[in-house]
Image (cartoon, rainbow, N blue to C red; front, side):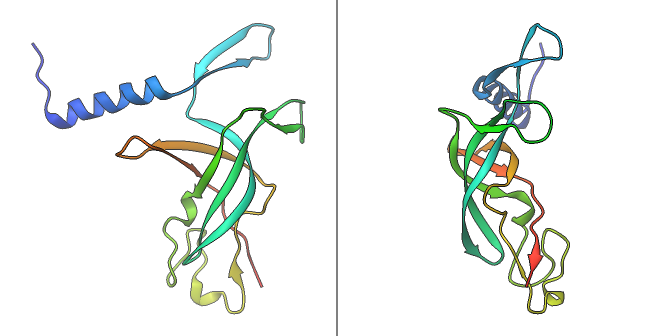
Length: 146
């Protein structure tokens, strides 16, 4: 019989919990058949931003979906996910040092780091906090202007 240490049991339990909580979405492949699979991301449009200080922002978003081929063709998903989103690249930002986008704060001069522009489409992933709540994250390199 196999034995497991506490960390192994925790990792297995976390993986099962994530699998059980991951929504299964049906997608249309390039043919005519439907494929169903689980994924840990969706697409969203930024609808607002709030400065949290130290070059960090929180963002509001609405889930979107692709309804036509090629560039453009994105639409808000009726009944889709909405909420607060954080930017992983901003996570290391501080009042001094180097920003997550690689720009040294000392080199900014009169310029400032800007939030993700309202209307921008982003890929959103989620993670579970220790208390079981969901938190949404994206990765987007902020612009700098003055």
